[in-house]
View 1 (tube, helix red, strand yellow):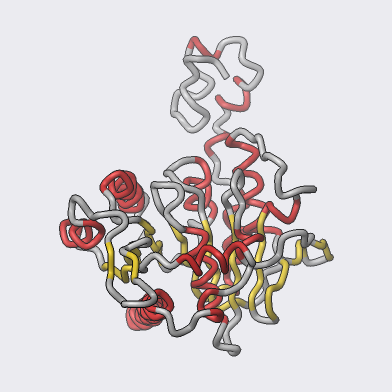
View 2 (tube, rainbow, N blue to C red; view 1 turned 60 degrees about the vertical axis):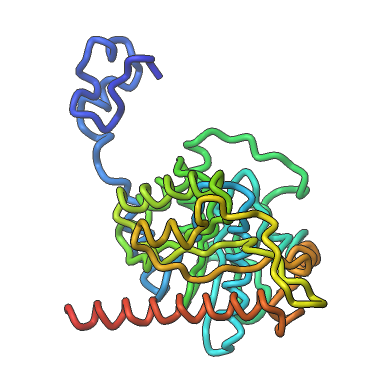
Length: 315
């Protein structure tokens, strides 16, 4: 691309002096590049069988998005009457297959599209991790190829009828996030759950994620603070391993008028369960962290139910 390219969606596309000699000048000047991607309507039709779509976001890496996404899915799927799926769009760092106990599984293709991999009869997963020959393989892709894979996941996976689709995203506010917003624009998304940890270095980036959601008009379901203190399994006292020097998520949510869904304490058993591909909620159901997880899940369920009620009352 020319350094001074006005961009394919600009009104000046194909018309400026910098466009001279570009092999794409003719198609840009025709206006064809500004036409909506036909995949958006196709994805809208595909997603019409999914009742609730929840994005899990954070501006910071390593705060526990994938861990939260997996346990949200496990908790929702514990109701055998609900159909739940997780879509992992962290193209360069897909950890969902390991966390869900599906490492080494492969995706199969049928006449109706790619078939997701199933943890249980009512819990499906799709990730680029299933398409790699080894979990250690690096995905070295530029933005357009990442975006094409996300489009394929949304359009070509045979999700079937779902009650909940949870989308686990990479950190930041970049290509993958913009692609998701664009491709899901023809369908209803309930909102985003934002994950953070208590320290200010995490909250700084999370505020950027919140601004991103506001700019693209993505509803925010609420904020979850991970690694929020350590509860001693013996004496039950709580220690602050990562002190909330600027007030943590609680202060941030109060300042930005956002719901704080819960504060999940540190528990080494969460990490062990993820490494072993097991549900922490099933392994240690009586732990303080499990109780907070379930409270957060109930809040998300209530939010989704209320959104449906509000939409029905306005139609």
